[in-house]
Length: 264
Image (cartoon, rainbow, N blue to C red):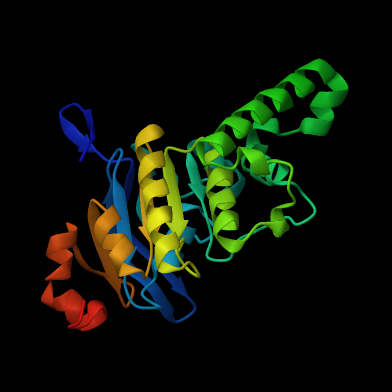
């Protein structure tokens, strides 16, 4: 596992410490801690209702923790504005794909770089050449991403006309357009066939290495999690249950009882 070092100390890309989130009387997260190292793929697993998606919402500031801290490369992001998270280096996919059907694949993916073209109307009035040049630069970057993901020939196709597996791939491309250092994937294999899951896992592993990404993956497909992840964190009832390498998690009695079952 590659890590960063600062003054001889381990500095993870993502470090969440003692994070608690409650909604009314419901404790969604109770003092959970988790870290993701540089260039590492970490799985986050657990039963439905364990707090996994709430945790991603806390990282991206869609939900505010009542206690604890969340740091990105040593910088606290817990109180950042939602609109600033992507610019800080965090990109995310969601369980439900957001496809803008009237837009082409290229245009859908360019939306991932919207923060680079902020204030586009005002800038276009004050500096029309600069605004055009920025959009042209982003377009070239997106075309390169689509080529990397094997979708260059589909750039002009309407996003909603793609088959489901390619819509998933388009969503990954849109996240990469933000040029993140941390990529959050929320159940990306949902709805894919066994063969498509294997292909998707190979894609994620490829972009991890080519872009030196750190990835936090929520997934129920245990074959994908066990084959792809360097480490796995397990949540149960909003709390940390276990953390370790795939072979350690697979044989952890508490994890087996709470989530995996004896047939895992």
